Every structure is written in structure tokens, then in C-alpha cells.
Length: 124
Image (tube, rainbow, N blue to C red; front, side, top):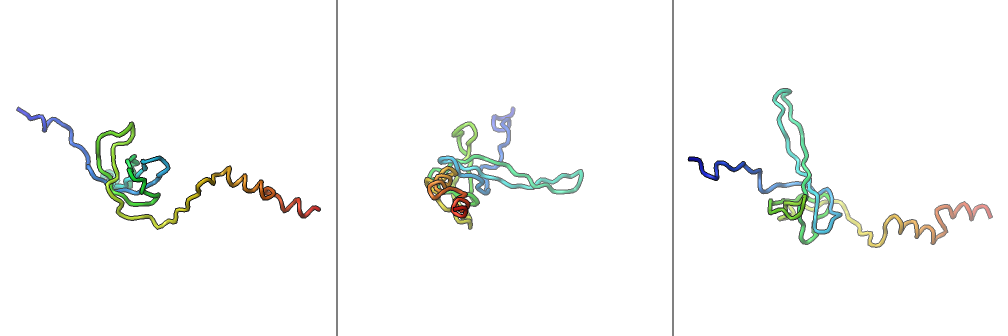
């Protein structure tokens, strides 16, 4: 007689290491997991990337950080991993543009005379 444990499918790894691609969501990050796969027919290796959503409780991850994620219960439709720790911080400087989007830049240009303020000053 086979036991219940033998019937279940083998799960993948419960901990993975990857690079943060996006942190634009609240308490969520998109992590890219890189792996290599051998193609025996052509005797080559192919680099494959898997993108996974992970829960970041403290919103501490920035784009480019190398993080370790762990499998957990499903937190949403696409999110079944949590960030356990940040292994390496990114070297890119992240400047906060609070209150400055594309429209903020346009408003600033309009207040200063517009984009073509030099043209109107040179014709007078």
C-alpha cells in the first residue's frame, strides 16, 4: 500500500533568490528569478527568467535589490511568496519625487513662462 506522502506531487524549492524588478505596489514587489536550463538536443544552456510577486510587509525593497523570498500561503491571486530578507541593496540612487509627476513638471513649466518662454522673450 502506498502512503499519502508518496502520492503527492513534488513541490519546487521553498526559498528562492532574485532581483527586484518593481516596487510600485503597496507591500508588494515583483522579483525576477534567473535560472539556467540545459537543452540536450543542441548541447547548450538557456537562461530563463521567472517573475514572481512577493509580499514586502515593511516596503523596504527598492528596484535592483537582491532578495530572498519564501513560499507561503496564497495572499492574493498572484502572490504566494514573502520577502524574508534583503541580501544586497541596489547601488542606484533612488530620488523621491513626492508630488512631482509628469503633470507637476508641466505645471512648473507653465508657471515659469512655458516651455517656449525664450521664443517670446527674443521676439520683443
